[in-house]
Image (tube, rainbow, N blue to C red; front, side):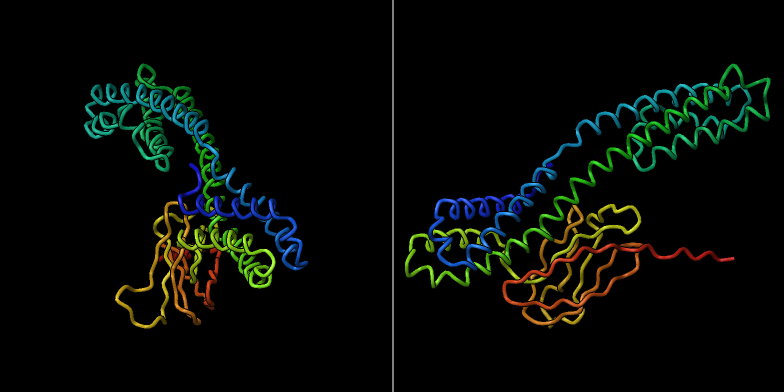
Length: 318
């Protein structure tokens, strides 16, 4: 899975800066405030590595287990639907024949993960009533133990799917936290340290030059900008809102391109660049209640949000 290119590039430069500090202990220690902040930078870098290791985790084992359970369940279900089709032919039930003919092993297996359990449940709820209404006619075609066994396979699949989703969520949250939490923390450390460069340049010009070279590389990545970023998740369950989450600035001066940006596949709004000022923003997602925020933009400052979107209440019309 791994961090995206920009995040990985940031981490490379943070590592370069840490190596510079390690190799220039005298220069770092020349000013107490600088030295103290460099130590904080080192601790924050450890958290960067922790997030990187989590983001670099693999769902391969969970994916294999999930797909195997899905294949096993599909095969068991298709064995039953095949007999269900035969029963439909026997009883001249053309509606049942149409359903059972459609629900082949390949068709069931290709059902989206989120809909798979429902597809198996449809097989069960379609055939089970015939066992009660025609107890003498159905045993040669499908029985209660067979349907129950299929349901148990379905439940096992649901469990493996949950494990897969949890593993994927852990990876995606780590990626999002690296962008929305850790990069701004590292930026603050660097901005603090930059304030002492002129003083250090008098005695340690090579150290300062090397420091500035690394900062220039960071700037070229495109993240030492200003504006807002966010990680958007559903409040119920904590799943990231990928692609359909959105941040819109409502009071921004008229520009050619509206100040609107969507989440990426990891639920992250990487950066909406904004001018210095105070802006009104609205986070939105389908079927969720909008969240309004105020964003105060300062030079070289990225305001990071973690947004938990609450689902709109379901209104039942009586």
